[in-house]
Amino acid sequence: MVKGAREKTTSSVGSGKEAVSQARTWHESNCALARLLKRHRRVLGKAQATAVDIRREIDALTPLMTALCRRTCRFCPEPCCITNTVWIDFRDLLVLHLLEEPIPPCQAASEPGAACPFLSHRGCRLPRRIRPWMCIKYICPAQRAVLQKKGRAVSAALDADIEKIERHRVRLEAEVLRRIRRKIQTSPSSSSAYSR
Image 1 (cartoon, one colour):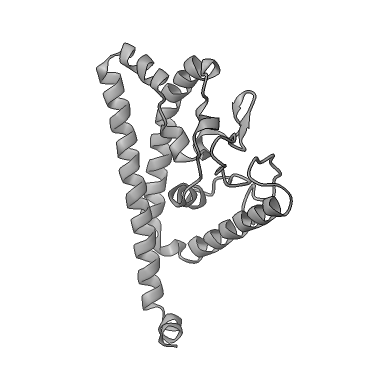
Image 2 (image 1 turned 180 degrees about the vertical axis):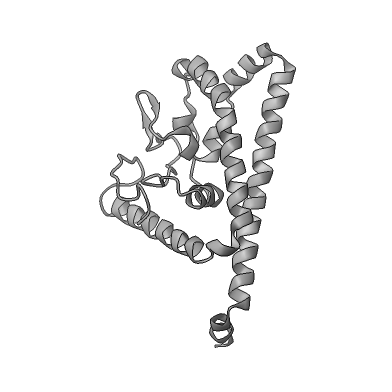
């Protein structure tokens, strides 16, 4: 079972049958991805190492990003958690599954103008390390202004760190897909399945 997949959350995404359907799809999709990665874990060592690097790099960003949020978010007239449509993407899920991190209980995607389902009166309910990458890396104009006051070097270093994580995320996805495709293509049972 996917960790956290059965937890309840108050989501602004749909209601009634639609919300149940979305929750079921989210749970089933994560279970399928978890099974796929577990089945091919032996060939995913390089991807696992890249996921560890991504986690370490995100953890290194946390103090600065947390300080920026504390300084700006509570005064923001247009909170990004409401004005932006965010989602947990495939690369986010790869990192979480490969590192066996908890999976958020639902997709973060929301309708434009609707609050993220993880937004609370104290900010995001998700620990920073399992938030969508688009949330982790987002720097609003107010935060940019704070960074500029700290000096160009601080802002440039943060941008470089974010770009490095972006490259690692692309590399992670490519490695997982390449290894699984190769494994499927060389599998004796796959040749008969593809010939049908």
